[in-house]
Length: 196
Image 1 (cartoon, helix red, strand yellow):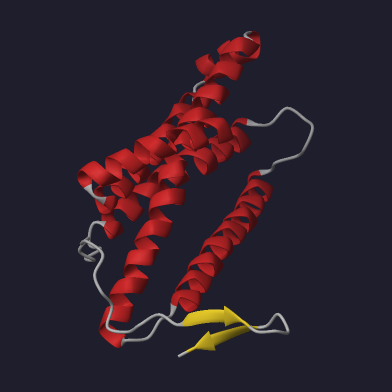
Image 2 (cartoon, rainbow, N blue to C red):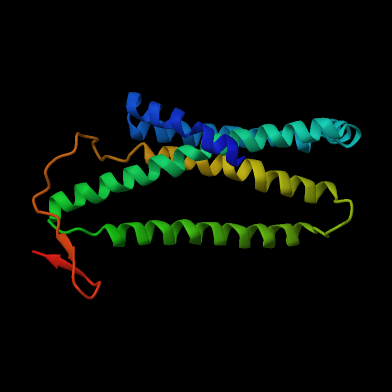
């Protein structure tokens, strides 16, 4: 998955240069949501029997899903940070203040919080469905697992695309900001000193 993610970064950068960052991220989110649909056949008893009888099919689907999810996730990792920098610059142009740390801190806090809450909810839902480790799972548990790992991400990315379409930051060429960034020098004691 990481190899697919890393190797797809130039593709996403090229797409962002050609169609714009907003369009590239929308395409990336849609692709990531669609890549989770590969797991939907796991619900079918026919597919379950086929995968139980043939480990190569199971391995192939796992590799395909992981590769597509990794390749499309790279878009969000690269483009989201770039768009965040555009938002910070735009806000600095309006207010005259640099709040880079605040923006990136909130962005990372919300990202980590979403991951933690998602993992907690998955645990609760699996427990409520009757999941027992290291035993053959019931149809209800399998359906819950497939829903958590395919339907839920698909719906989440569809909502994210719909919300992100209303994002109104206009991409533009770098502009001169209404302030001069501070210059720094190193003092004799090794401390960094801001020069105004």
